Length: 454
Image (tube, rainbow, N blue to C red; front, side, top):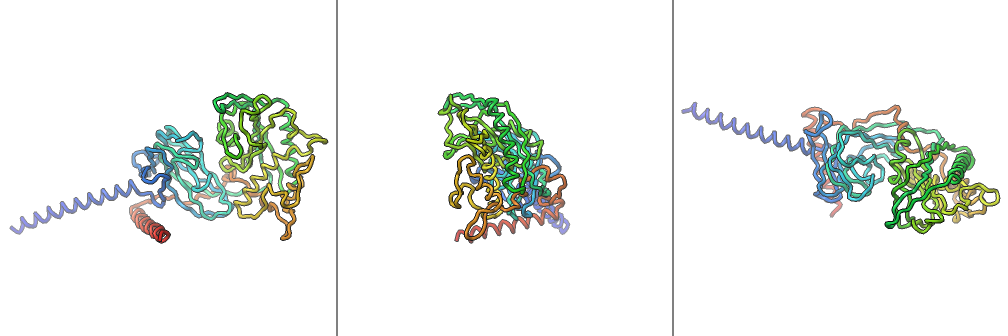
């Protein structure tokens, strides 16, 4: 009788043990499917996208990180990382996509790496694609913390579909501290767009190209002369025959060329070189079509960027009789002014991002300067570039070090230092430790949100 009781107890204990082991297995599988390590998951439309670890669709031995959006959404998982100020960094990962499409057409929407709450991003992948590497190159500037996001969507809009991310890597580069700036100057020979259901086909002339090339050469010399040798400029000129087929629109400026509008034409050239600034020279009107494209009185637009590289529009005038870009001792002795002005907008933006207090580039009248006949605002630019604008509190303008604070680029990573901020757990002990770290971190976040609400 006693043996029967012991046998029954053994069987019951075995069943309980098996059930417990099965429960532990299910819990562990749940953990594996939902463990995003130290990443924070967020989305524009809450409870719309699904975040999972995928052990079947993966690039390497580790489970991939999958975002599924059956509805249009901007979903991401991100991690705040500590960085050194004024230091170039490169984030890479492998990405695979299925059925990814943007809610509105934009090349900046899709599966990408980005810095949340900024426009800094990698290329955006859409459609059905196999595993490929993408990278985000950025400079930390005045920041000591950045929030790196792996994203399905974008700052420009929402996306739907599936995206898998894997094999994250962060590298620290070395600054290019010389003050020579390399410029890519693209002259687009054809603008072939449809505006308000009307086809508009505009070409630049051989005279336009000759004038612009001369003006760019003058711009190189003026950068050196007006900065009093604090910077030099080398400009490579490219004549692009492939037409511009799309334009961007802004309520303040009307139609203009954004980096996304010409990415197909310039990306290979930019990727093969190490440029610090981009000029896109375009014609958006002429005597025949001057009323067909809405342009609100601008000849240059700056403060844009192409993957962190300064980007400026230079618009050719509608009139072939204009002397805007032609040197003439009696009419215009400073035809390179628009190029310099738009470049200075990029330096102005950079200075502010690094925390410098400088005058607004357009505020020349407030400091007693004038837009003079023949030379425009040349005196203002010279003093602005050399911090020689007099005020009662001293001299103001661009600090000299601004000329060495160039955008991060591929050449900054010839010698790199890999940081282990995306290390995956290597064993069960590390996984258990990660579970408790995530638990405590989430409790801390919830308590912080609760304290803010009360």
